[in-house]
Length: 353
Ligand SMILES: NC(=O)c1ccc[n+]([C@@H]2O[C@H](COP(=O)([O-])OP(=O)(O)OC[C@H]3O[C@@H](n4cnc5c(N)ncnc54)[C@H](O)[C@@H]3O)[C@@H](O)[C@H]2O)c1
Image 1: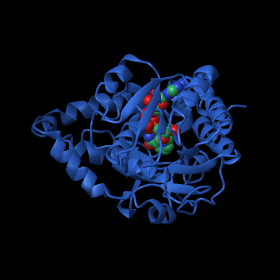
Image 2: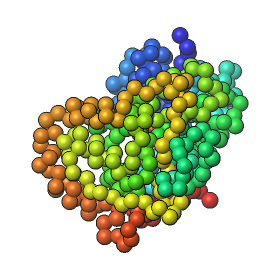
Image 3: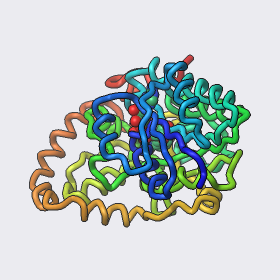
Image 4: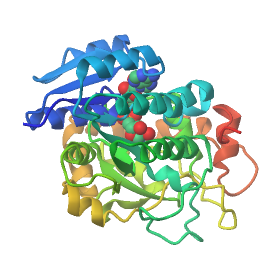
């Protein structure tokens, strides 16, 4: 049995599923995450074979102690601050996403037996993608582009890992979704942020359980030194504006979400940092794609329970309320202006200068 896997950010969306998958495989797992009331509560539900080491990875001393005490054979590095929170907490996000990654890598390199390092990256590293101009799908060789703070942080963190002396693997994830409505906590900011995104932008979704499968497989597979693109099968090649309404309809809220705006076909930058991805090599190496988009919708419907019969009645009211809270309500113009809308309500989205 391979040695201990240290999962940073192990109580997040991807982390919780990855820890579950590793535990299913009988692996010894240590979760490293922030000591918060929500994470303490989640810690009570951890599967057997999993322990917690509370650590703030922006603190180099805590990180040093963590790695020395756990002596992991593999580090799965998931801890990060992602959109939309990243735009509200620029300075902290840099410390977590870039500086803490550099510290963790340096500490890992200095261990007597340096661990394999599996880095969570994102299709965001390719920057804004205008589907009218950008040819796709993106591959491991498609050039990186800094379009916003998140794409820049993910690219910088990935470069730190790839330039290290560790046995590294980079997983670039698509849009991670869950059929569990509680897995992605509801927030007004997230709702607003989603309404900023061009509805005809390409998005490659993936079930979080398949992402977890990929991370677990990447801890042992013969993939050192590879950049692997982690997204669902071809049924997951969708458009941004399809996803929210389809999931909401599966849960009973048909026609309950307002329609957003399309992106500007003549702009290279006024698009979000997602695109369809070529997952051929990742699937060959990790065999992780098990849930189609339709499977996810069917399961979301099954899990919705009796609420499915009540929600249709609420749909018109919900839609009217959300319409007024959406990014382009009473805004001039015809096309989506995602970065302008983020700046107006959340914070400066531009890359660090
Ligand atoms: N969710 C997606 O669609 C998606 C897409 C592409 C890439 N990714 C990447 O996957 C990884 C996991 O994303 P997620 O969706 O699970 O995010 P998440 O926000 O659900 O989880 C992040 C975790 O990191 C922890 N964390 C934050 N700051 C920390 C610190 N200073 N010290 C220790 N832990 C800290 C948080 O407490 C949280 O548990 C990230 O690196 C993200 O960039 C996610």
